[in-house]
Image (cartoon, rainbow, N blue to C red):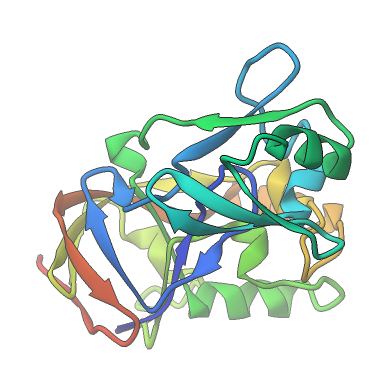
Length: 227
């Protein structure tokens, strides 16, 4: 097994950035979802309420700061004085950007396999599928499907794994919501994806993990079981 994709999402509910390497702490990848989007009531909101957020992308510009790219290609930093106004105009809602607390430790990382992505693509040939729909942090390849289910990570809850110097423990399956139906820069809006996942997989896709030993991971790192 090996790590083939590594993703960070500097802003919650906004598209993220592909990384070659990352430091992973007890709360997940450094800088992951460190910024949130607040609505007109000054409460944190999400792409289920503001779908156009999923059409925006963000990359890390510094500690606690992201650079956002709008669908029309305009870019700005999250700490710019007009950041809220520009994002509001792009997503059609009155929003601002603010620092967001760390992940719940039991959900520090979201992990998927290429086997699962291929299985889903086979089951939904008329749907456009890529990782931007599902927002994993880690994507693993060359994963044995011991149960021949097509979704090997669904049997990992309770197990521990090493990737690079990182040690993680799989805690729960990832319960899906309407976010996987939303349009992103690379896939269109598609309700069929969530309907199929709910009907055939009990609404679960992918697995969440807690970090037992922080460490550094790099694309290409070998993953191995510790139990």
